[in-house]
View (cartoon, one colour):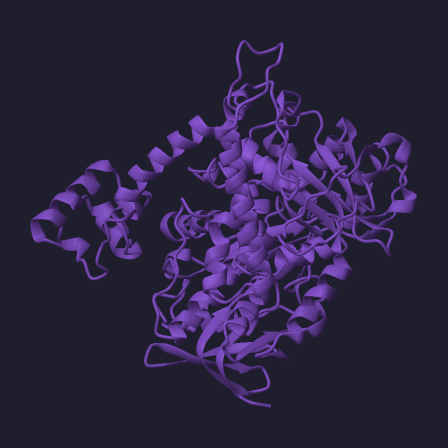
Length: 609
């Protein structure tokens, strides 16, 4: 077995897989180290991809040439477009997936990939020489060398699983933690934080009373995440909804002292936007019920995920909670819920390329940076893989802006603002979300994916043809007029008529509009959105130009912020720590206010920097 590689990735979750595939596809001789071969791409919590903002990330990863969206479509068993009743900026594709099939398909992609060696080993040490990462060492003492190292360990760094008063070491149920690697990072001077997440119980679908559950079928015309692949999506199962009851809340309130979280055992900080059921009851006492979703885990199992009942209470209390919920009175538990604590690194340790400031050649991706979620991890993984290979080539990294992609928002938030809890992507975090809709992520990022060599030529040609058809159809709508019609005083251009709230593209046909036979429903939706929201899009574009003026004002990395006396001390410390790459990024740093950035701008002009 070769012990020398161009690039090494540690961790086979969504971040590690995307990093390794991107690196190998760009021609780097890559090694992917995993604790267990069977665990590659495992969906540790809910077997679902997408949702608000996460669906946007999944489509961006696909547009760049990643695998998450592709595998989600192939293993999807239930598809829904969320938030259709709201504006198009927040529409969000979501898929429920077959857990086992997703992991199997992802492993197949990894094993078939040229330039990629898959190795089962526990990595315990980063080998550093003269401030640069040059390799890793396994628990068996074997050293492997590479020019670039990517760490994507998920929740395995000193992972600790909690159920009631019982705590056991583990990175995931039934899998060992990476304790030695945490100790090694401490030796290198990294400050580790403790975060916490959790998972709910799984129940046997056959034990549920469906007469008390509200069915949630998939969309009649399913939409997935991956473009230009000719995949047929099918809804093969339904999900179901129910609610907690006052009895549920009583059981939880009376047993809070037995929770790992409220019993003082867990010290880590949990995700505010995905709280445990205990947190919901304590923090929202005015609510008399909370939604619970029953989501099947696959086609060849009766196991089902009880979304909304994440908990660290003891097993007997978990069962009492479930039995107090309508439809779940006789639910048989197949797996009990647990909470997990793990180490992560302050994201100020990395720059916007995801490379460590402390150790060159070392890149971090996924939950080690304080984020949560499959999509957030995969987004960081593909960018780390891209930028690490660009470093091998002696080229500058690619840094996506906040106006270009949700991936840009995600990484900029982590690096610039940091996080004191597991970070989750939301559409509200993106200032330009009307421009960054889920339906146009290919238009923003596929040219970059093609330039990097991550897209097949077939997909690229189909994308180009689709854009040609879209532009032609938009031109037709903007220049051609309607036929004479009783509803109209005089013929109008189709685009002007389409701007009326009550008129859809389909209704335009009665006024003489006939779309080209080659134009797909997807292209027609895009055309309709661009015309209907033209005014809002123009306003967003104007705001974007003002934003770019600040983003384009680059800041040198060697600026001595401590010496700029016109800037407040707190702002100097923050600027020196983050080393922003632009004035725009400096403006977003917590603790740096308007007067500080104004003083910095004056200093820059005076010194010519």
